[in-house]
Image (cartoon, rainbow, N blue to C red; front, side, top):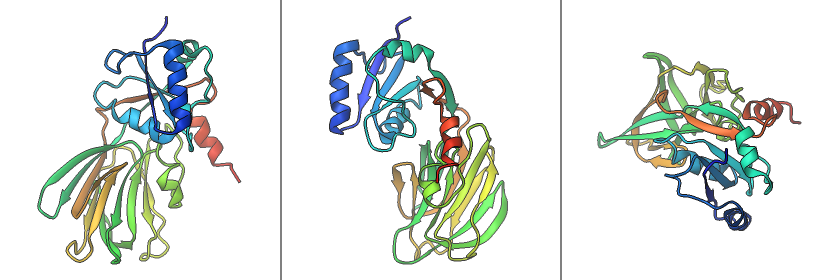
Length: 254
């Protein structure tokens, strides 16, 4: 069976060249008509393609034509329909962020990698951490804090010295960014069903923004975060190169 393919690409020159070549070779349909989306570029291109799948949950297959390609397959022009039919499927759920700003307005966004809070000014952030309605940390003094999925644990979370989470571990990473007090707190591992509430202490003096992947809300007073189990995103990988293997291998890099 030959799937109907919709190609999407980042603005990088190599991704745009690949888009022209593959369109000419295999043809293309709209994303509404497609059976599968093929994203060309780096991980940013994959995330952009996945964000457009929140409603229809069509599978996305990435080919690396960018910089970071952790979520991408090798770029090979030949036998694309055969590769798509043989690909392994990985289903992930994003995080649902509900951020309340100082005016009381609520902002709802989904995040595939992480939800992060960061200070907006020179003043350090002060954040209260509540997990499943129990206060776990009365005051975290820091540059910020994030909740990351297993799929996103190798991104910003890892750069902030958070743990790499294996796919299927059913965990979320709660990771501080430059924690000042408690100085030696390095974060926590939470069950994927956890409800995390982050409350800003003194939001008038210590302005904080909340970001769901690349969507930012400024001047927030609280953020509620929970996995969106009603949303399933499907990634396709060549056999033997699935994301769980890449995450395992990343932990042994020196």
